[in-house]
Image (cartoon, rainbow, N blue to C red; front, top):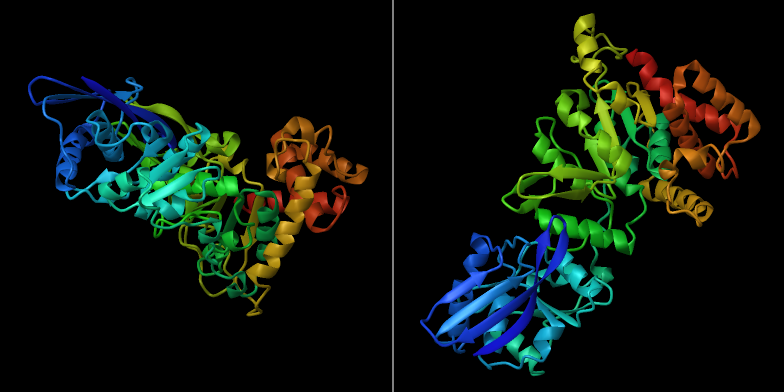
Length: 503
């Protein structure tokens, strides 16, 4: 009897989980037993591994083979354990040395000819391997670009089973290397494409500085969607930790382009007919599929024609807007999915869209129809919107500043805020907790008096907190050490401009 151990990894939720593969070879009838809560794709791994080993000129053992996947209580899914199982079998039969098996994680699907195929979710598996102190991680060629960005991880790309064995013996090297320079930093659409709309452009800049939620109301064709689509072009690039998080989520969701890491804030714009599962995520068996809210983590979630979304779908935004995560509970899996995003809503003033037009078009919506339309976005959700903008018809074809020029100001203002919050666990103005707002981050006395008047005129405590956060973002853009009375007044204007018309 002989026993060997190798390491693999699977995805649980949006995180990686190391799996210890134990392979025992003993005398008996030629059978292969696989234990440890495998799903159908993992059960089929033993057939792929056996055929790949034989077709690679290696020997499949005669007798009884028992394969155990630990931890046993964790449900395993996907074909990513193929390579780890094959390496464990080769180690148990003495065809390779078992010394390197304990210091290497093997990730990849095996073809019947022994070729190594890429798998979704390889990046979170490499991350957990690096955190556990594993020396090396073997991945398929197609997963190299996204996995090489993990710091303190030696990622090796191989093309087939024979290449993996040759690497362990020191006879061949990795297929290639990548670095953070390979991160996808493709330039989004330019803000200069939006003609006119100076106030809306300025409001978008304020929202970008503090990460504030924003709502735009205007007739069709005034530029609401164009503005929203260009916000990622004025946001700072993602940090290295954020690149890892965002790329891992999109790798699991299968939305990576060319398997390259993501370096700019993601932009998610689901259609208004999207279901609850499409927004918050779903669980199929034991496999979690991130929804649009999770895919927008560290980025922007844009809901065009927001009143056309179902009321339940819109109210599902309330928890992640406050906590930054989604609590997903299903029969086969329960846990938290990250969802810290910046929300942008766009809507017409009424179902026909002509309520605010200054042309010959006339709105024929009844008051009851308009009331149903405007109240589709509930009061509690509206209360979580910091910047509200009424966008008029285009009156000028003047081209504004480019995204690059605006982004430089946004980055400068964010750096000011980051220095101010150096001793605190947050970095953006929208993240300041209420207690700190009312004690450490008050505006100038005149601005504070104006803020207190706003609370007394039904602004509410939550509304005053959001006004003050926006005032700090305006102050950072204006290079003010504290929000002035003018900064607070502008923040109140941004808070109340749309709600006044909606009322």
